[in-house]
Image (cartoon, rainbow, N blue to C red; front, top):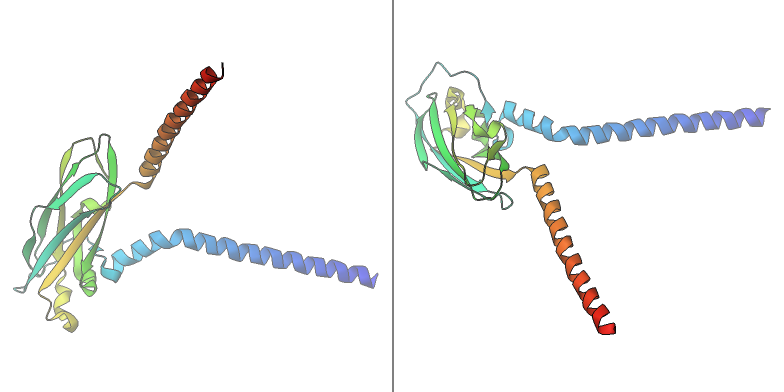
Length: 216
């Protein structure tokens, strides 16, 4: 009786351990999937890693201090677009609203969708670079050959004036890179694979037909 009780207790302990391990694994998986959007939210709030902040209002204070804001525009190789800035730089007074313009043109033969990611250098400036409006907040879709003008409205937070580490900063660079929608890219590759497979099968069929004629 004692032996059976010990066996049952051991089985119960093993079951509890299995439940605990499963819960830990599930939590780790959930954290992995959540880490990307959580990191994005954290970066937008803090400006960490050169990520700009998002603002829905303008500051009351406008300083006489002027900082040159430069712009870069890049495209990932998977996205068949042209993307460029319509101005290389803007002399920006701290606290004053500014608008920068970009232009994208599709080189694709079909409708394509891209999303822009961005960062600011020096990275420490990210917490003071506020975007009020930006094309990078959502997906952008262009039809074949279509052009579109895109804009970003921004300002430099006057709090930058109180950061002694940035007293000597005279140039800020805002960079964008457009990436292809991943689902769209995968669907296009699957379509190409299907077409290639069909061509190869056609060649095999022709070779089989030639071999059949030669054998008779």
